[in-house]
Image 1 (cartoon, rainbow, N blue to C red):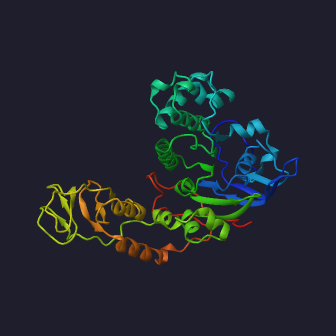
Image 2: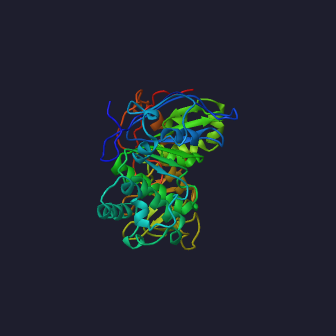
Length: 398
């Protein structure tokens, strides 16, 4: 068995919970007989209502909290056999609002763990500068202090600091909850982009099911009392909730969320109503310019000028959820499908979108795999990748 080390890039990736229980001194059971295998190189999201034990579960991995019973292993080694400070230096940890040291500059905040590991300070700061750039912060921020940064910028620094020792495992506790929705979306997208490059084993806690299905390769819905309601891929979680609790937690609009995992490449697009001139007609038509880009909608029987075109979606890149969003935001009820250059390829109404969903749902390739596997996370789109191939987790269930 390989020991934990305090430096280098040794890989300790698979995290296993075997009959883990956490009972606090007052008798509260936060986690109850939890068995769960978190696969290598994937983003696993723990989600559930307040009091379900998700943060306790996360913090037992790096021994911020020790289990009452059961075993937690990282690549086969019991975490209780590792000195807590040593363990934590090998596991990245990101919390709400970054948790930065207020008296240290940004570059020194990022280099905190390398400093503790005894790395050369000049090299540690050089590596920290590279990490700041990687998470989208300019070099000019290096000499600033945390209070001089916005909430979103502080979160980026927190991610950079967690990556500074190149840990194979990262724990993230509500990392994007303390910022506004626009900043949060940008941070989520940046996080997914980084994961496609880094392939870390990431465990992320959130209370937001939309965030869970966007970020997670696997999602573990936890019930109050620290039990597993369902552990599955986002797509199968939305398609087939295991019980009434999971179904209620996912919400009434889980069908719309499910569209995020179905690609738009199979849509039957209408090109007959895409026109280059404003001739009279009894149906909605989309007027395009000489380059084929949308100029506006021509209403049925109207001689008025075109109405503004709403949102478009990129055929083959965006999901059916983006297509549905486009259809809702256009006055005709049609989605505008464009290519990567913005040229209109055709229109899709609700019937085409639901037809494409039914067709894709019944494809043989939609059948789930039966075993977990390692590998990289999905893409960096602004919503869950429709083409994301997801494994079936082991150890599902209570």
